[in-house]
Length: 163
Image (cartoon, rainbow, N blue to C red; front, side):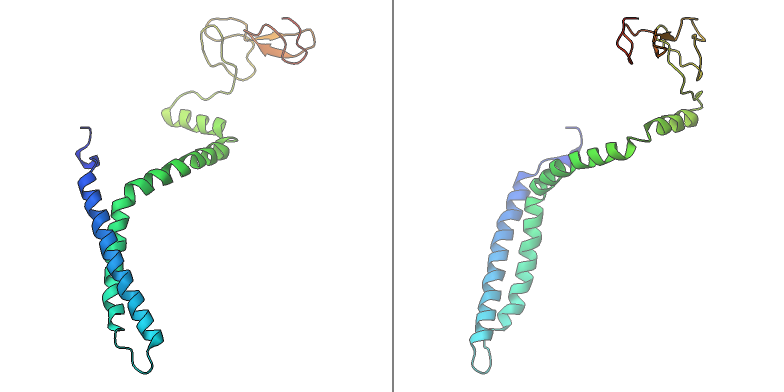
């Protein structure tokens, strides 16, 4: 049992549902009876007081039904909204991921660089570096077409020639 507050309560849920349906039904019958009496009475309605009795029953029944079905409705809502929220967050972060990474690195006190990463040792190098600061390996391969490619590339990304 990971968290005692997150226990499943099938007995309480069943009680809420039963009380909710009974109370809501009583309230609905009272309100409908009061409305029928109100609209069919010639002079003075005799059962209109049932409206004031039925409304609290409707309220209590609605609240109990809400508690009785809250888990099912919440699960459904979460499964419908979570993918949308994820897509929205990814859409909003799409153009800012690099800036977000820089900000996080700056907060951590790390050196911020957009330069190439060494394929051999994994060191992040300065922008414009041709050779790794740590191991001295070449950071890019230049194709005969003039395109700079990663050091571990086997084919040129521009023309497709073998490097």
